Length: 106
Length: 118
Image (cartoon, rainbow over all chains, first blue to last red; front, side, top):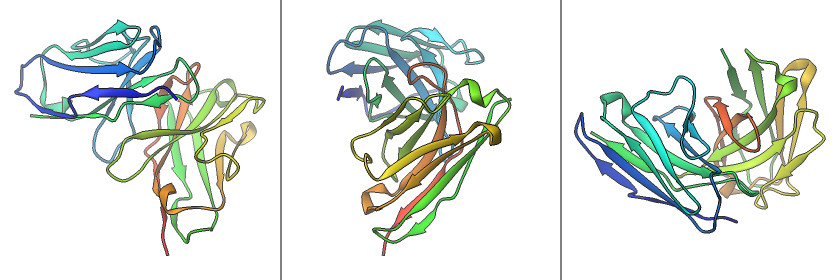
């Protein structure tokens, strides 16, 4: 299975800060990388697909980049409603696998 | 608006069985593949199973192969997960997730909790 490693596992930032989360794949996955947001007690919400494409309706302060094995997720200006856990997920090969998550606090 | 509503979770003893359901609305259910994804308490996300739109292609995670069975009824806009020989490590919130293409999970339900304990 392809292992996905996120860092950091948790971080605390202030409103208005630029926040970056990284995701590393154990092998080349091309652009087959998604990002999700999960708030406590809720199902995940789909944010970014193909590493850098913003899902319709997702806030434009969210962005993604990278290819191959190294990817980043960025919030350009942190808002209070962004408090959540963020997950990367590869879909290059079965089984689809997720990173361990990054808990974001304010 | 896409809606996915899971049900059927609960407390079951090790070795027991449970059947989860996912009721879909707001989209053409028969046109999409569907997945089950689970999350153990305080842990990350783990993909469990996939069914293509016509049930012609089905996949399972190795951790549940031979014990879980995914199925769907397109006439009832419903997805199911039959879980047999349950183990303590199957304890999790189970989500159904719509597959926009090749395991891109673009819509999720709120989940149903399965607890396996004596």
